[in-house]
Image 1 (cartoon, rainbow, N blue to C red):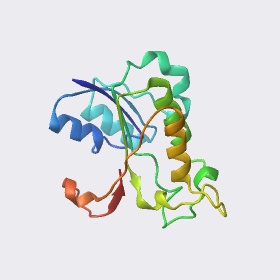
Image 2 (cartoon, rainbow, N blue to C red):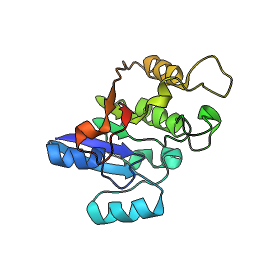
Image 3 (cartoon, helix red, strand yellow):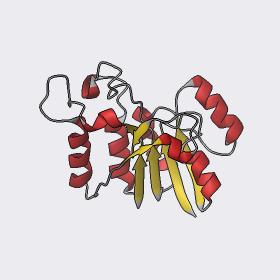
Image 4 (tube, rainbow, N blue to C red):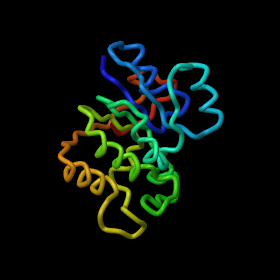
Length: 166
């Protein structure tokens, strides 16, 4: 059983649900702050700890078991073509904390899901480099390799068919 820690979990219908449906995973924790989502997680996964705000997990690091896989669905608003694309300048950007957790735990696998706009979103408005390039460099510096693919969410039985970056 792979020990899975999921961040920016939402209602738990993404990576956590898929892990239960596929089998072979033990969910060892979540990181979610939205009140409605937290309520749903408590009902759907009553034995799994929710460690709260990903940006404050540093203080709780020793409480989390060693994950073998970290999954994440960080808020997409900082990178979406539908928004202002403030990227690193947006306080909803959870990637710095997520990358810190990945570097701290060094899981065997990491899977991150977001909007395809992340691929070409500037690091900050007007910047020549992209935030995606920043993410890949951070992963590479900590010894990780990255692969990515754009896929239609409808391919995974989602009720909506939007392109997602994995």
